[in-house]
Image (cartoon, rainbow, N blue to C red; front, side, top):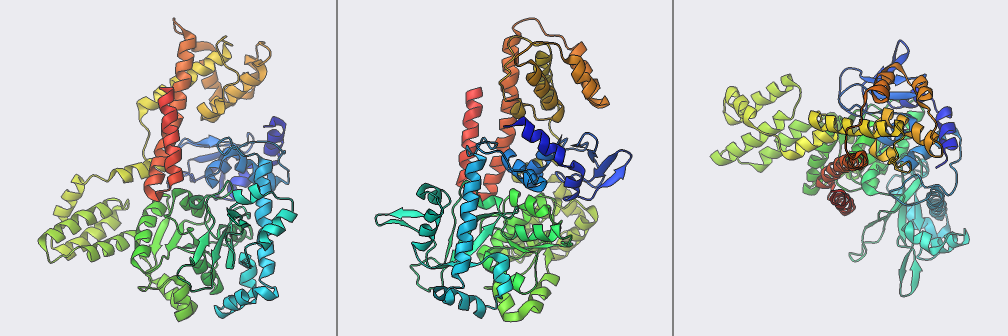
Length: 588
């Protein structure tokens, strides 16, 4: 990675204006303040220093950093993608043959080639729609009331056969291996073919405006021919990290259009139908169980979501799971109660935009929806059924943070069951939230971390930094301190001493001391003057501290993945979690 490039990128990026794109800011003195976008809070503890171009949360999450770290967290992307986003904003070109994303093992040049491939084939499919052979697809869209402006908004196209798209891409100097990597070619005994052949093509465009995948819909009614075919995960596309329609929300935001709410559907055809009816903030979850990554993406645009899944049993089950994820990300959630057997596309066709608007107007809250589902599940005429309903309803109420709202639901449950409100409250006091709820709150930095663990981490960091400052012989200047030291002060010190002492051993303590702010001077003073190395094998202690901090970071990541896997059941998430657990075992 070129430090010159990163330095120039950060110099061209105003962190205040960058963060202002995501949260409203208030200036107080020389700093800007906001409610932290990374955890739920009602008072402004998120601070930005425009002079130093750094941000920090003084609240429970204690996160901080520069423009790159902010984009990494807010967009849920790796370092390389964060750099690409900022470079695009700054009008800079990322150096070729670099690999910022260590976990993917893919260079920026390679990723750009795959994005270019997808952009070109999307244009190819779109042009097919207006050819003589593409008229059946064009007629299908017209019959569904999808206008040319909507076709262009979504870049809809058509794959006419199994060969033409592949031939086109090969002529553009892409290799068959690259086509396979992007899921644009599969190979059989007869050779390579387009897996989407003879389908209406819907480009999946990420929040940065890049085509990363496709959804294909057949017009045939052959039961042996799958109605929908979607791209599998690729190096540039992960289903549970992608929100269909996020690019259109991004455009509204860029155009300063207020996004009062987002409608979340199950499929892209529902989104297209709702946009055709004038609901321009409709999005879809890619047909998978909603993930925390997707919820956080949506939170970048609004704090209110209408979840509008199909009116069948599977759709309602997905809605129930999605509600918890969205609420856990700090979003206000309403459930649109769809007629049984109908999806948003069906409602628009049958009842028009006004009919769908009436459903939005009647949307209910998360607790209402859950209690409604519990009433369908249990028979209140039966003593055991009534007791089970009450126990589960109390668990729903206990998750409500607003005490006044809790009181209203206690009254409702009392009315439904005949149990006294005091009895319900006493039972609520005894009710322990499921472990999943606790994990969810931990994943969103709501629950405070254990103090003894924090002290242990701090002491390990202090010893490593003191070893760097003291220029101890056992210090490894090639170590990846960005990975093990996850706060901005530690990174600053580590990077400074590595940069200035890798090839020479001269004293640079005074230079660093002059560069840090008053708060950091206190911490640096402790490291420079008061820390004493303990007797014994300092090299062993140094290595133990390195291992301890690595394990701490891996444990946190493992917990996040465990939470995500419980939500999504995504095998790739489980695989990553097992790989990290193996790394932890090796460290131990």
